[in-house]
Length: 165
Image (cartoon, rainbow, N blue to C red; front, side):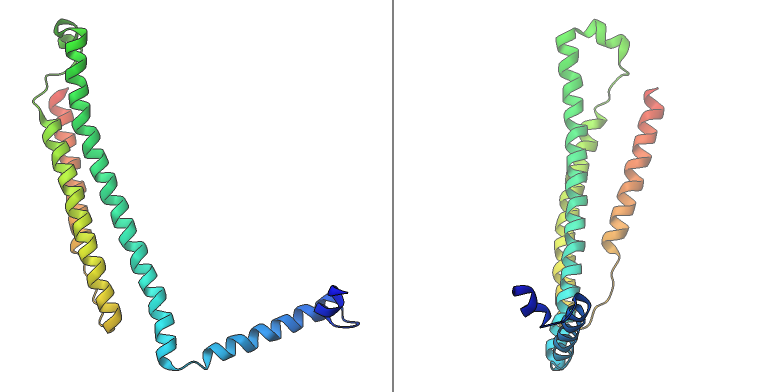
């Protein structure tokens, strides 16, 4: 009985799908009748969600950089503790001399990640305001900061590895 109500008396499933399609098209055309303000809000909602996804991606990147800095700094502490546990005589022959760079690099990376998180929030709020005012201007300061920091960390790590071997 419920099948007959949905499809209509004597109709097959193709006719039922056609009827459903026509109802959906009427609903879609009704949404197009909305005034310009309503359609702008819908469009802005999508742009705001894209802005939020970008912000969250920058936050994930900054958390990753901070976590990497934490690991680099704590690994130096781990190596120092292992040298005390196993005895300096055993560790002197197996490890390259440490100049304490890993603690500096670790702290630098944690600070860089924090700065990137702060700049990502500032950029998010700025873009949010520009979207509302319909005056969006792309800015690449955060992109340049990330690229330069990755290059600087890469150069430092290559230099460190060359000097430690």
